[in-house]
Structure formats: C-alpha cells, structure tokens
Amino acid sequence: MAAIAFDPMEYSRLLEGAGVPRDQAEVHARAMTTAFLHNVDALVTKDYLDVRFTEFETRIEASIDRRFAGLDGRFADIDGRFAGIDVRFARIDGQFGRVYVMLGVIMVAVAIPALQSLF
Image 1 (tube, rainbow, N blue to C red):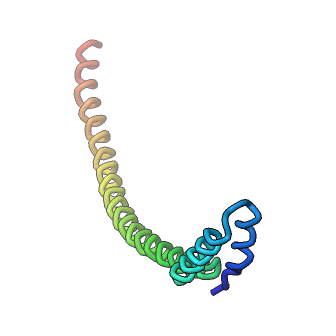
Image 2 (cartoon, rainbow, N blue to C red):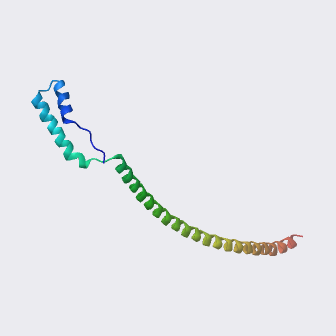
Image 3 (cartoon, rainbow, N blue to C red):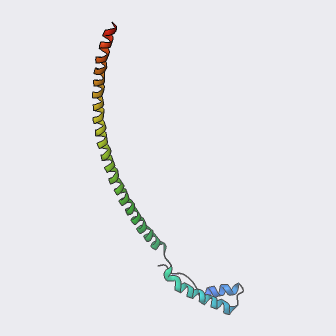
C-alpha cells in the first residue's frame, strides 16, 4: 500500500503562515496526523481496485456465460420442437395433395355427366 506523505510540522507552519495562532496550528496538525493514522488502513490503492474490479468482472462474465448456455440449450430444444412441427406440416401438405386429386376426380365425375346431358 502506498504511504501517505503528510508532514505535520510543515502543515503547522502553513497554518501559522496563514494567520492561525501557533498553539491552534499545532493542535490541528496533531489532529490531522491522528486522523490519517486511524484511516490509513481503510485506504485502498489503484492496484487493489484493479484486482477487485477484475475479480468482479470475471464473476459477472461467468454468470452471464452460464445463463447464455442455459438459453442456448432452451433454444436448441425449441428448434427441435419446430423441426417436429415442420415434419407434421410436410405430412399434412402431402395429405392435402391427395385431397386435391380426389376433389379433381369428383369434379370430373360430376361435370362429365352434366356436360353429356347438355349436348
């Protein structure tokens, strides 16, 4: 972890230069030093954040990949079901072809006697 560069004496001199009384500047510098020391453990570095974000990204990508794999399986199942429906439609189309032929024969059987009776 990177160290924080804080010089309490320099900070105290800066405060004194800005018009803060010496005693008050020293107390303020000690308070800032204490605050930095207490909070330095809570600070994170860019490298730490990069590692954490990379871990998070890896977990999210794995989760998304698992979900897409599940969806791919479901789509494959649906594709199989549609293939079965396509087979059934092909069979029905063949049956309609036979029906058309039978209707044509029936029309001819009805039309020929009707035409013969006219002539």
